Amino acid sequence: MWAISPALLLCQDHTWAAADPGVCVFKRLMILAVVPVGVLALWELGDAATTDTAAASVDRASAAVGEPITFTSTNPCTTACSLTWRRPDIGLVRFGGVVVGRGEQFSMSFAAPGSYQVVLDMGETCDGTSRLVCHSYASVFVDIVDPVVVPDPVVPVDPVVVPDPVVPVDPVVVPDPVVPVDPVVVPDPVVTPDPVVVPDPVALQLVAPSDLTVTTIGGRTRLTWTNPDTTATSAVLERCKGTGCTSFRQLATLTTDTTSFIESRIKRSSTSYSYRLAVSDGTDTVYSSIAVAAARR
Image 1 (cartoon, rainbow, N blue to C red):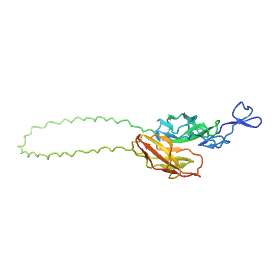
Image 2: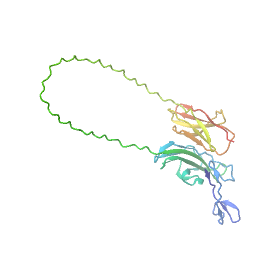
Image 3: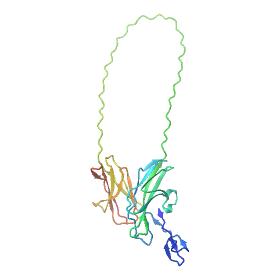
Image 4: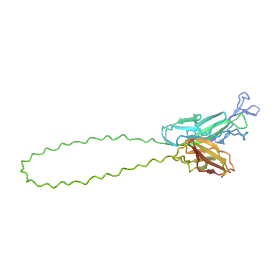
């Protein structure tokens, strides 16, 4: 995915100025700088960057056609910023996609089955300057399927009652002599089976995911895991620098039903990062297995 830089003005004396009509009004030229999605700033201020990093989650990874899905920005925005949600699959790919929502959370549905990408665009004042806006991006993916069609219940049809045929009356028959009746056979007593013993239900415990996995796709670190049955009421994703490190810091606060997280990064690094999940039930906290993202050179 790519993004476009703001316009500059080419003045009559062939000097450049910011896009302000009061500076020069004779010639206007749109300068397009195509840069990878991640953090975006003007080229002459290469050290500028966002204070915060965009991160997003979805309330479910799959849904039926027409069923609403809620998307949430999971990283706080500590400076004045804007949050815009885009869909690159319906046009304007060079500009990050068509805007479908704004704010920390929004809901939408999809009209056709398929796999869709929704991108969170976080724009805020760049570090090191007060006049530029930098952007960082995070993507979430959802699968849309056709709704299940429940057939109408089958209504039973009453059987056709065929009347018994008329039986002609037999002539009077002289009965046979009385035959002695066999003695009545008394059946064995019914044996009552033992009652079925239902075991007590197993009480849930506070358990953290044990299969935290990290992959790198297009310069972005993606973490996935499976949530076990647990009493956890909150989950926090933590990160520390290096392999075997112990000084973990909070990276994002997640819901307990979240199963994936994408960390947007565009700079290559010679440092590995370790990740873990901390889940809590309000009294105790337990930690998941540790996943390591190798250094990207």
